[in-house]
Length: 317
Ligand code: TXA
Ligand code: MG
Image (cartoon, rainbow, N blue to C red; front, side):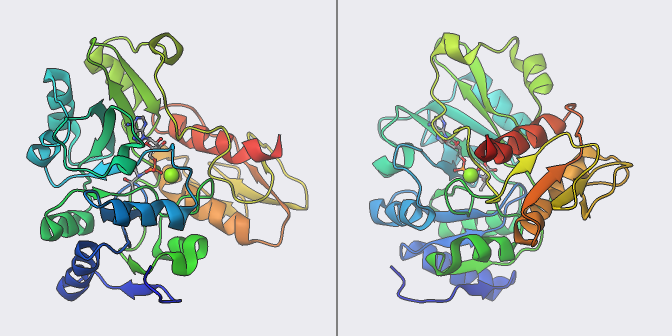
């Protein structure tokens, strides 16, 4: 434990990156901006450091973490890459695609990272700050989203502090995350089948085009331990596909439906994804006891937006 009771906010400059890298090397947690959401990072090779992630988030120990790598070569030290995996990495890395692959027997990661599974989730992030940190530390970094388990994901340094408080000793303030929703997760299995475990910025249609038809998750018996129905909770009821709203509802608008906060007045889904958690955090902080959200189309990244909203709404069922 750091023993500090405030979160140290460091800036995106050489001094800030060096301080964050030193903290990570010594086994501390640092929240780092990525292009999707902020991640709560720890060195992936240290059981003590990884245990701090689970403690800070209140995350159940059966829910494994994504490991962030500086490049494909570093990823290949951790997982078995077949041709499909290498092809996807070459197409989409650095970027918002996480690959779940067979764990290498000699992989240098703490057991808790994979929650004892024979697979590991890997991603090379596109954000220059996370890249600089990975470069400086030289060790892969385990990093789930930097929020309390089940709560809203952070797309700004302030969101990290609201959710984790002093449980996160240091955060690098890199401004707002560009994509705004978590990476797409794809599991590639040794028998040649695959499944999308979480929709995200890389769409299902794109993956179907590259990999061929997806295998139904039930048929494959795949485990997606983190995809609990209740997740991304703003702590109050959420109503989706709302064409109008009640007085006691904080209204999140889209397109021609404008609200207390609007995802995109021009109806741009990428902008809506980038603003999703910002609006949900605003709704959570508002004095209104409920949140209503305008209908969001399912095309492109709209699938991921609707997935997160459905889980945010699940608490009120
Ligand atoms: O965009 C992102 O992916 C962000 C940034 C920080 O990189 N990270 C993120 O991590 O969203 P987290 O922990 O909030 O979500 C990781 C998901 C969980 O649902 C977890 O269950 C799943 O990845 N996961 C990790 N390892 C897995 C594995 N071996 N098999 C199946 N699912 C796995
Ligand atoms: Mg998360």
